[in-house]
Image (cartoon, helix red, strand yellow):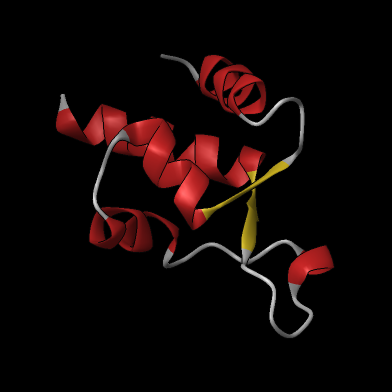
Length: 75
């Protein structure tokens, strides 16, 4: 998949939103919590969700980039 395809697929998965939280990423990929935490460890959380008590969301563009890079490393 290309980065654009990942981005489009991720946006479709969350009904057009521009961010995803860890649970949504885990459900999208069907992976473990540890795998998802490792995926986002270097990503900066979306600013609108840094308020106390809310789950961290990450920008879909950043997630798509990391997924694309991982895909190319696994080949």
